[in-house]
Image (tube, rainbow, N blue to C red; front, side, top):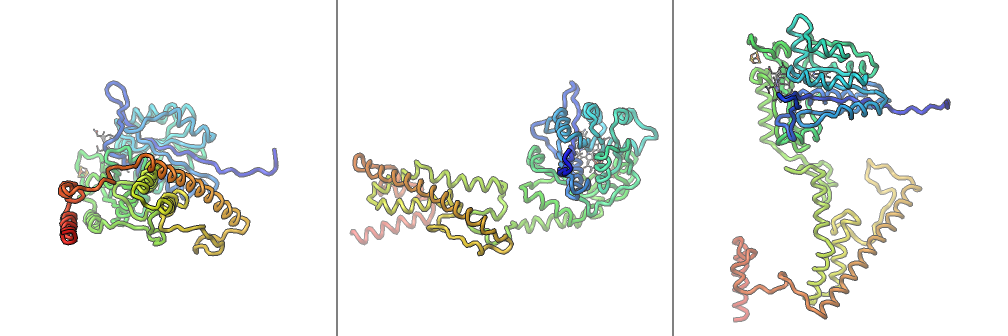
Length: 466
Ligand code: B12
Ligand code: SF4
């Protein structure tokens, strides 16, 4: 073996699954679109992502977190095993927010994973509730332990690092029980699911818990046995941050999962904050004024993501300056006796600017100048050997494209002039408007200003032609 061993970053695969349950015929209950997003999955996903950002397995290890909600996405256990196999078994599966009715399904998912020696941790209301309330280990939980799963009771906030580290070191304990030490919800990562997961929910709802726990003591209530009798709340600042994060991604609806929001000690300031956000419902704009031209997205669109909006802009240029449309413009020019050489120059400038320079035509000119040292502060000055070859290639390739476009357009212009001599061109837009049409065509009648303009033109005509 070579003495110089290169250190390759390892990637730990953390797959989070929110299991569904079976219908009476034994099929998994799942949908093309789910009705409510899983808050448990959102909570554990952000805790895991935060641990990944903090590199809790050391600087040489990346942690990839994947979240799957089985109510709206099919679980292919073989694919998960293959994924973790591709990383030499370096990974784990978390069965998240498992409720009692979901426990059998969760176990069925866990079995093949455990057969493949993949660490599996099961958390959620069933494990927490049963360990909190029953004196001995119930059969289902024991079965999970028998196949080598780990049970997690309590809440994962401030605990997830230890779980990931133990799984990576293959030293997970059978049970982690933090039921007697429920965490404060202040300054913990806020529930969030990737856009792809939220897209699978009707109306693209996100979810969050503003708080946990309830000060009441209803005898039948399971919640207080799991989430405690003390009301623990997220701060209004945190809720605002959470809403803004989703808002940027176009998510406007939220399902608040608290059992007793009215008893959340912070309910009033939280709602005041929601009201304030709504009243301001101000549109954030990109603070970089340099981008406020016609080519950059600088605000949020009510319906489109930034990428969709950018694509729509690109598509609009392509849709307008098609070869057919350029030919129509040139034919109209030839038909109306317009100087077609001048028309060619203008049409060339307008149709070539965006595809070649990615700029609006009114920002372009002839021959782009670039000086190596005149660069915006914050951007590095490129070395001579990099800058000049790149600039040279840019000039050559752009001018080659411009020449091609010019030649194509000039051929079209010649064709339009030639055809005009043989068979004069006309279309609806070239037909003169008859006087009667002034009172029927929408463009002359659709508002008061249009009607006023028609009346004015008639008056001028009467005065000048009698
Ligand atoms: C919001 C909610 C829903 C939502 C979203 C589900 C969700 N889990 O997000 C919807 C409307 C879909 C729902 C549906 C149902 N729900 Co519900 N739901 C709740 C509610 C009110 C809040 C859930 C929540 O957000 N909790 C907060 C999260 C953060 O807590 P958590 O899930 O326990 O997760 C923490 C820990 O357990 C741990 N953890 C969890 N998973 C993992 C995994 C790993 C690897 C680790 C390390 C840690 C860990 O860390 C998490 C973060 O701290 C709870 C009551 C409650 N207070 O929990 C009832 C509750 C969970 N639901 C319940 C029931 C019965 C149902 C339904 C079966 C109702 C029905 N008949 O249809 C369905 C099930 C359908 C489904 N697909 O889930 C029961 C479950 C009872 C039980 N014995 O399991 C509860 C407890 C209500 C009750 N008192 O009866 N529910
Ligand atoms: S959560 Fe509801 S049922 Fe449970 S103790 Fe509080 S008020 Fe009673």
